Image (cartoon, rainbow, N blue to C red):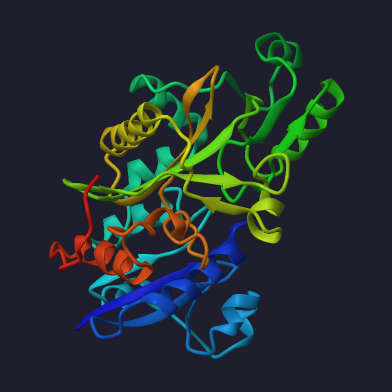
Length: 340
């Protein structure tokens, strides 16, 4: 039986999302195949073993549960066959953790350091999209020396403003005029020293997930039905937005998005799993929006939304966990699914 460490938390604005993700992994991991432990990283970057009821993870107060400080982190990590990091946000999915694990030859699920850096930084992701000839909406990347008139010259209102690095739609704002733009830029700089500004388009938001390394399993396309005007943090985690499998997309658009998703997966040398998000409208057709290498694993979102894998040839949450762990162990399990 293989030993797996589920690693969560971290000094990140997405700390609590990570806790919920860890809970979902535990609820779906096959204990006939794997033994597991949970380890959490506090906001102060102190590492602890966590051994208590999962309700502490759901509420985010896991430090109030039964915890045991880990003093020699590297030796502790080396005791496992594979690490399953579910640490969202800064320090967890931006290449830093991956670099440390690579340095000490510790096996882990997910993409390597370089791919993680590029996937986490939206400005770098967009450079890769351009290199791969994948369409995008018009955008501008700025630092604190920005020129507001240059932004307004390049993009029409309304615009979307967000930190370059970060996820879970934290720090994202829609703006309709210069005053709102200045305020939103100031807000985004609270989260990162680079800000990305995109032309806002009224469109359909689509997702495509990919599992694999040499050979891929591609999910169905999912469509986000946001309760808000766009898919912000409130719409994603607080309100009752949903993801559906649309049945009215032109077949050529479905094929094109899946082609783009595989192109990004290969071009960025992504490992094990990823979700690539797209915009679709009649003017821009299919445009790449962002890459998500560290998938939110809340019940309704594990490896994007579970909806994407619900087809008759799809994979259950448990099967997806088995698949990703065994890929890292270089021994693929007998998980039946149709490669699409």
